[in-house]
Length: 254
Image (cartoon, rainbow, N blue to C red):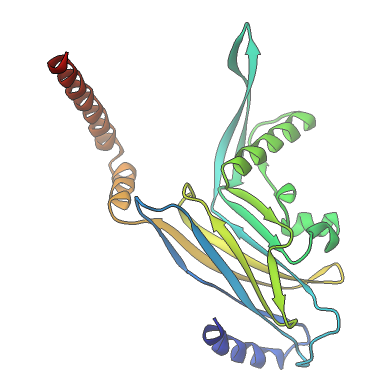
């Protein structure tokens, strides 16, 4: 990790000659994560350094917040109610844009670092995500569906928050580990690092991470996207063939 940071630190030192604010030098343990049939999740390490303009480490070390965000996607949340003894879909709400994955780690609880306005601007925390509702709804209904979406993705492991997940060493080096679940969506992810000092975000840096399928999973995903009609017909025929085969085996045995 130190060898990877050395050239980045040199570039940051040159940049500091033209400014007076700290500079973040971030990196990640893997720029590409491949999902295969045996993929059971991964641990992504986000690390880096804080370079100070004077070269002197302040007495009070600033805090770090790391956010890993997946590609945005539309989603429909349906609310079930018990009607005549049967659970049925009673109401729904569509979101035009919601992160498919969101994880945040910080050196201290975020409410101790910034005020609510700053947290909302930078989306520092699950409750501060700026979701885009696609249908008009009363404020109390919108809040209920937002809470339902967040809770659903928390249970799936797609939304997570760790208030003590960033470790800062010597006031300069930092690291944070974020778990990637097995059912993580594919796409381009953004790893954002924020340096917080005295309630203000004084520096920020971004790195992109690609999560994609490989091998047979990639072939199936590309086939479903590029040849959707043929893919649909093939899956129907495959299902019918498997059903016929199971019925034939059952008749022979019994």
